[in-house]
Amino acid sequence: AELQAFTLLDVFLELNHYKEIAHIDSEQARLAFAALDRSGEGTISLDEFLHLAQVLELRFERANRSTWIGSRLSRLLARGITLRLAEVVRSAAFENAIDLALIANGGVLLMEQWDLLSGSEQAPAAEIFSGRIDSWWNVAEVFFTSL
Image 1 (cartoon, helix red, strand yellow):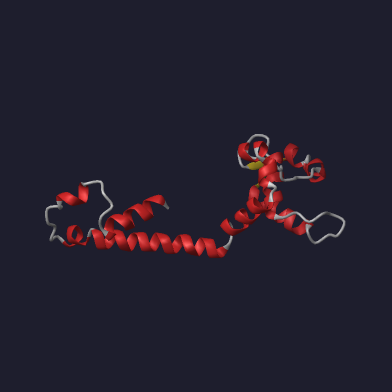
Image 2: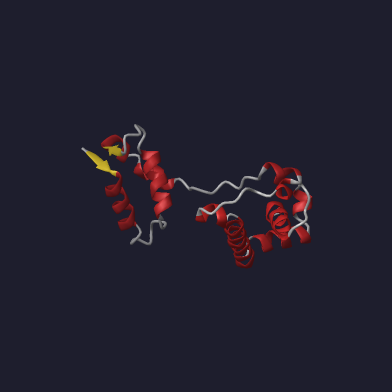
Protein backbone atom coordinates (compact mmCIF):
# COMPACT_ATOMS: atom_id res chain seq x y z
CA ALA A 1 0.00 0.00 0.00
CA GLU A 2 1.23 3.47 -0.86
CA LEU A 3 0.10 6.98 -0.01
CA GLN A 4 -0.08 9.78 -2.54
CA ALA A 5 1.27 13.23 -1.66
CA PHE A 6 -2.22 14.76 -1.27
CA THR A 7 -3.21 12.03 1.21
CA LEU A 8 -0.19 12.74 3.39
CA LEU A 9 -0.89 16.48 3.15
CA ASP A 10 -4.41 15.75 4.44
CA VAL A 11 -2.84 13.88 7.36
CA PHE A 12 -0.70 16.92 8.17
CA LEU A 13 -3.77 19.18 8.00
CA GLU A 14 -5.56 16.89 10.43
CA LEU A 15 -2.55 16.88 12.77
CA ASN A 16 -2.74 20.68 12.89
CA HIS A 17 -5.95 20.30 14.97
CA TYR A 18 -3.94 18.84 17.88
CA LYS A 19 -2.19 21.23 20.25
CA GLU A 20 0.42 18.62 21.21
CA ILE A 21 1.84 18.67 17.68
CA ALA A 22 3.49 21.73 16.24
CA HIS A 23 1.61 23.41 13.38
CA ILE A 24 2.75 22.15 9.97
CA ASP A 25 2.26 24.63 7.14
CA SER A 26 2.05 23.56 3.50
CA GLU A 27 5.74 24.27 2.81
CA GLN A 28 6.82 22.18 5.79
CA ALA A 29 4.40 19.44 4.69
CA ARG A 30 5.97 19.36 1.21
CA LEU A 31 9.44 19.20 2.77
CA ALA A 32 8.34 16.37 5.07
CA PHE A 33 6.83 14.50 2.13
CA ALA A 34 10.08 14.90 0.20
CA ALA A 35 12.02 13.61 3.21
CA LEU A 36 9.72 10.59 3.48
CA ASP A 37 9.62 9.80 -0.24
CA ARG A 38 13.08 8.29 -0.43
CA SER A 39 12.34 6.60 -3.74
CA GLY A 40 11.36 9.92 -5.34
CA GLU A 41 8.33 8.36 -7.04
CA GLY A 42 5.78 10.78 -5.56
CA THR A 43 4.29 8.16 -3.24
CA ILE A 44 5.04 7.01 0.28
CA SER A 45 5.46 3.28 0.91
CA LEU A 46 4.57 1.69 4.24
CA ASP A 47 8.26 1.60 5.20
CA GLU A 48 8.65 5.26 4.34
CA PHE A 49 5.44 6.13 6.24
CA LEU A 50 6.82 4.51 9.37
CA HIS A 51 9.53 7.17 9.40
CA LEU A 52 6.85 9.87 9.82
CA ALA A 53 7.52 10.32 13.54
CA GLN A 54 11.22 10.86 12.85
CA VAL A 55 10.45 13.36 10.12
CA LEU A 56 8.03 15.26 12.39
CA GLU A 57 10.85 15.67 14.89
CA LEU A 58 12.87 17.50 12.25
CA ARG A 59 12.83 21.26 12.36
CA PHE A 60 13.04 22.97 9.01
CA GLU A 61 14.74 26.32 9.23
CA ARG A 62 15.47 28.76 6.47
CA ALA A 63 19.19 29.02 5.92
CA ASN A 64 20.40 32.57 6.29
CA ARG A 65 22.84 32.75 3.41
CA SER A 66 24.73 35.86 2.53
CA THR A 67 25.34 36.88 -1.06
CA TRP A 68 28.86 37.20 -2.43
CA ILE A 69 28.63 40.99 -2.31
CA GLY A 70 26.97 40.94 1.09
CA SER A 71 29.72 38.89 2.64
CA ARG A 72 32.47 41.13 1.26
CA LEU A 73 30.80 44.46 1.84
CA SER A 74 29.00 43.77 5.12
CA ARG A 75 30.23 46.94 6.84
CA LEU A 76 29.18 49.11 3.90
CA LEU A 77 25.79 47.40 3.71
CA ALA A 78 25.20 48.00 7.43
CA ARG A 79 25.54 51.77 7.07
CA GLY A 80 22.49 53.97 7.29
CA ILE A 81 22.60 55.30 3.74
CA THR A 82 22.81 51.80 2.28
CA LEU A 83 19.95 50.59 4.46
CA ARG A 84 17.89 53.61 3.42
CA LEU A 85 18.68 52.94 -0.25
CA ALA A 86 17.57 49.32 0.16
CA GLU A 87 14.36 50.53 1.81
CA VAL A 88 13.68 52.93 -1.06
CA VAL A 89 14.35 50.29 -3.73
CA ARG A 90 11.96 47.86 -2.00
CA SER A 91 9.20 50.47 -1.65
CA ALA A 92 5.97 50.60 -3.63
CA ALA A 93 6.82 54.16 -4.73
CA PHE A 94 10.03 52.96 -6.38
CA GLU A 95 8.13 50.14 -8.07
CA ASN A 96 5.59 52.65 -9.36
CA ALA A 97 8.36 54.97 -10.58
CA ILE A 98 9.96 52.11 -12.53
CA ASP A 99 6.58 51.19 -14.00
CA LEU A 100 6.02 54.81 -15.03
CA ALA A 101 9.48 55.00 -16.62
CA LEU A 102 8.81 51.82 -18.59
CA ILE A 103 5.43 53.12 -19.78
CA ALA A 104 7.00 56.45 -20.76
CA ASN A 105 9.78 54.61 -22.57
CA GLY A 106 7.20 52.58 -24.45
CA GLY A 107 5.32 55.76 -25.35
CA VAL A 108 8.44 57.45 -26.67
CA LEU A 109 9.34 54.34 -28.64
CA LEU A 110 5.82 54.18 -30.07
CA MET A 111 5.88 57.85 -31.10
CA GLU A 112 9.34 57.53 -32.59
CA GLN A 113 8.42 54.44 -34.61
CA TRP A 114 4.86 55.47 -35.51
CA ASP A 115 5.64 55.98 -39.21
CA LEU A 116 7.13 52.50 -39.42
CA LEU A 117 4.25 50.94 -37.50
CA SER A 118 1.57 52.73 -39.49
CA GLY A 119 3.13 51.75 -42.82
CA SER A 120 4.03 55.26 -43.94
CA GLU A 121 7.75 54.97 -43.25
CA GLN A 122 10.07 57.47 -44.81
CA ALA A 123 13.78 57.07 -45.28
CA PRO A 124 15.56 57.90 -42.02
CA ALA A 125 17.25 61.26 -41.97
CA ALA A 126 21.02 61.19 -41.94
CA GLU A 127 21.19 63.36 -38.83
CA ILE A 128 19.47 60.65 -36.79
CA PHE A 129 22.58 58.49 -37.09
CA SER A 130 25.07 61.31 -36.50
CA GLY A 131 25.82 60.27 -32.92
CA ARG A 132 25.06 63.77 -31.62
CA ILE A 133 22.38 64.53 -29.05
CA ASP A 134 20.72 67.30 -31.01
CA SER A 135 16.99 66.59 -30.81
CA TRP A 136 14.50 65.82 -28.10
CA TRP A 137 14.25 62.27 -29.48
CA ASN A 138 17.96 61.81 -28.90
CA VAL A 139 17.61 63.22 -25.39
CA ALA A 140 14.75 60.80 -24.66
CA GLU A 141 16.74 57.86 -26.06
CA VAL A 142 19.80 58.70 -23.97
CA PHE A 143 17.64 59.20 -20.87
CA PHE A 144 15.81 55.87 -21.17
CA THR A 145 18.95 54.01 -22.22
CA SER A 146 20.76 55.27 -19.12
CA LEU A 147 17.89 54.07 -16.89
